[in-house]
Image 1 (cartoon, rainbow, N blue to C red):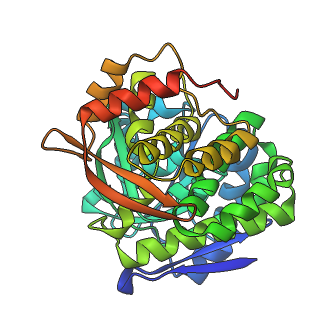
Image 2: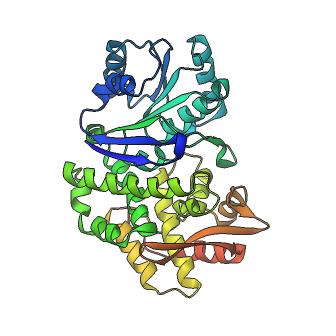
Image 3: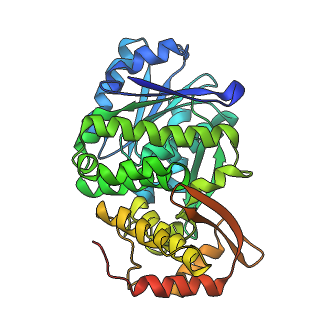
Amino acid sequence: MRTLQVDLGERSYPIYIGSGLLARSGEFFIEHKLSVKSPVLIVTDENVAPLYLNVVETSLQNAGYRTVSVTVKAGEKSKSLEVYENLMTAAIEGGLDRRSVVVALGGGVIGDLAGFVAATYMRGVTFVQMPTTILAHDSSVGGKVAVNHRLAKNMIGAFHQPELVLYDVDSLQTLPPRDVRAGLSEMVKHGLIWDAAFAAWCREHTAELLALDPDALGYGLTQGCSVKAQVVSVDEREQGLRAILNLGHTLGHAIEATGGYGEFLHGEAISIGMAAAAKLAVNRGRAPKLYEETVALLGGYGLPTAMPGQLKADELVHAMMHDKKFKEQQMVFVLPVDIGKVEIVDDVTLEEVHRVIAELKEEEPHV
């Protein structure tokens, strides 16, 4: 088992990465002195529940905890105010109190949704992340929790750090290939923004990661989580440095929203967004290799980098104007300076965005 620490003073917490950890949930709860007398709410989805819910419930119950479990539909559409309200009802009816724990058992959607419940129930209760996807190695760390508005992704949310992150890598073996590829896009992102050597490692170990090789996965997830932990430890509430984690997200979130939170997986949309950021950087005078190397790296994982023809530029730009990063009629973008280094720019014009969208529509799709 590998252990990382997110250093946030009183809100610091560990990330445990290893095999068989879900079956030891009760052990970790006891170790972290989580209240045995207060009910635990487990939030999961219809894909994860048949595989791992019983494992977690059994472990917690054997350790003396009383559990209340709610299973929601899989997918981004569950990050809604309606589902949030249903979970709040379940928490109230289940007798959760201020010492209760909310568990997010699933991918990024479940982490965001359950985390927002934890952040707002009785003005905030303890939260434990149990990610079961590759993508969630990014989303489960850092305390960003939210639900979507129909006009904009993650517009209704909070910062609420977990008590711990319990990352059982065995759960990744049941992921569909498309989810594997989408999750690896965020792993690649961590190399592109922070660590050129890790980006090169991701390029050299593409086949092993796609095949879910345990050693490669363990190393890659640890490195990815380490980058996220370092950045969050410096800037918890995204007042500066943490914004670099948004590489590809300005346009990526617009792609998700325009597609109705169902047509594109998060990692797929972010992959296109990272290609767009590299293209924008080249248009602003950076070396052409930035775009070429970014597209080659993402394309090697079977990730999309061209703009799908059915997406309309005006609708994408409209969605971006509702983004939290839109200020004074200009977009805030994270742009690459080199592989492993990025900068935050706040003067990207709507004309530049339209140009990049048009250019990416002319590129050959990779998938």
